[in-house]
Length: 425
Image (cartoon, rainbow, N blue to C red):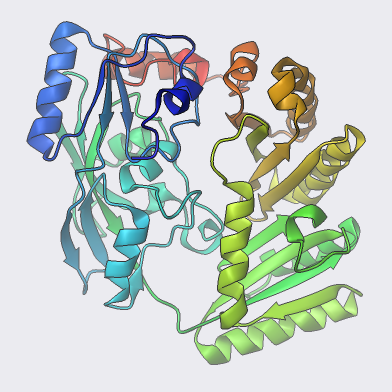
C-alpha cells in the first residue's frame, strides 16, 4: 500500500487522531463483516485500494479504521469471446492489462497513476483518460458491480454480458462517488481488442489554427483514440516552441493508421502547423511521460486541478489558464481532452509550501475563468491547509439536495468516507 505512514495519511485528515488501524480484508465476506461491525458501532471508515488517489477529494476527520481492498486482488472470470472480465476491486490496472494482453485484449483506460491504480479506486473516482475519446467513460465500460452497503449487506447490479442493463442506475450512482455510497467489491468490465498499429502526431501552432484543426478532426470520419490539447510547457522536450499543442493518437490496422496519419498531416501542412510523428517505439514513452508529468507523488508544493469546459471553448480556456499562470509566475502544465472538454491543470510553486493560503486567490481566479465558459474547476491535490480554506469542488449545479438524499438513503450513519465528496458528503 502506498499511504502507510502518518505523514502521508495526514494529507487527507483535517486533524488528528489518526485511524486506529488499517485492515486488509481478503474476501468479500470479510469485507462485509468489517462494514457490518462499523455500522453497528458507528465506526467511521476511510476506504481505499492501494491509496494512489487517497489524497484526492475532501479532507476528513475522526476516522476509526482505514480499510484497504488491495488484498481483494483476484481476476474471477475472463470471457475472451464476450470481451468481458470480472475482477475484484483490489486488482491493479497494470496487473490486469498484462493478463489481458496474453489474449490480445485490454481495458481501455489510461488513468492517473496507472501502475498503482486499482479497479475499485478507478470506479470510485471515475478516472479514465485520453482513451475516453474513442472508448467512452468508465460508466460505459462497467457492465456489473458487487457492492457492500453501509449496513454490511451485499448488493449486486448488472451482469456479465454486454447487453444486460439491469441495475444500471446503481452502477451509475456509485461510479465517481468517492466511496461515499458503498464499498466496491468486484466489477465486470467491457474489453477491447489490442490495436495492431499505433502512431501519435504532435501538432503545434497558434490558438486559432489549433482550434480549427481540432474542429476539423472531431467533425471528420477519422477515428483517433485520443485527441488532446496541451500547453506548450507540457510538450517539452518533444517540442520546445512554447506554442499550443494538439496531440492525436491513431490506433487500428496498419493501413488505416497510415492513411489517417497522412490526412492529418496534410491538413496541418495546409494550415501552417508544425508536425512531429511518433512511431510505436517512441510514442509509448511519450504517453508515459505525459502521464508522469501530471500525476506525480503528492507534494506540498503542487496544486492539481480537474477541469471541464465546453469542448468548443477548450483551446481558448487552455490558453487563458496558461496565460494567467504565467502572469502569476507559476510553473504550470495544462491538458484538455478535446472531445469531452475535461482535463487537468498542474501548478508547482514553493509558495504553496511556504504560504498555502496565498493560493486561494489563484484557485478562485482559475475557477472563475472556467465558470465563465460554463465549466468547472475542482481541486484534486493541494496542501491540507489550502483545502481547508476553500471549497475544493466548486459545485454550482442544482443537484446537491438529490446527492444529500442519496447519501442519507445509502449511508444514514455517515460512516463511509465521510466529508470526502461534494459539499462534505
